[in-house]
Length: 344
Image 1 (tube, rainbow, N blue to C red):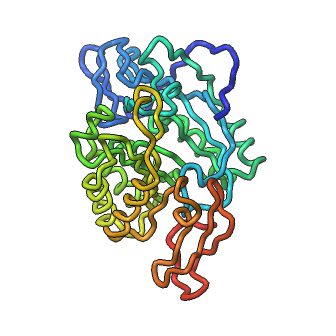
Image 2 (cartoon, helix red, strand yellow; image 1 turned 135 degrees about the horizontal axis):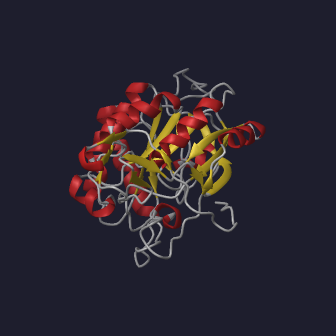
């Protein structure tokens, strides 16, 4: 990730979408399922939305990181393989995960060591750069759902230029938020971080069900969806938890790609061990046993765990290096069965 590295300006607040005025100058934020009701001048637990004069304003029409990388790093394996994504981030998150590798961005406002680091976004300049790089535009690293206003502004300019927008999101969004943004997103990768509400709330501070609802709602809108699960100790690293997640995904669509992510010790979970290759291998087996056709492990298990096999005859259809695609076809060369995805 490339941070901008200049002295930080003051926080700039803009009017937010999904704001409802309440009696007594209070305001309700309708972006995430916390549905915070804020007193005048009160800031929500996300630290980037607050009540100003009876309406919600946001600090996330901002950019704190810009990085050009490959679409496979989102991770998106069935969407425009081998292409690039200009990835942006503004500080803030609706979750408080103790393992977050991007905590310096995502946990802004939750500790004195995390000062504001954003700069006002220039959608025109960002779209022009993506166009020059022949890249999609993505929002990741922090929670893109909090940057709904920036996403919509980017979409207004990106759509005429033929530039797709993608998100890597925790999926903790209200139905209204999904409905507002889904028509403008070509693809999303949604994290399922735990198998049940109790484990999910312990890890993130939020219930799981809205995340699952968002996955189904994005799909109903026609957005391409892939799912990623980090094998966080105590949340999604046990066989029972992984089986429960895999069975849920298979019930939604057995062709839905599932990415198993190796846990890396960071932030407040530095004393834990990284996920072992044997645990990742077992997790991939659980996904296959549940009926999922496309289960992936980005690293630790080699090329075979990244490649896409035809679900009909087993022929390797797509080959990947760690963070890029080396060869691909939209259908099996042997039996001509189509591979699900968005390939153009």
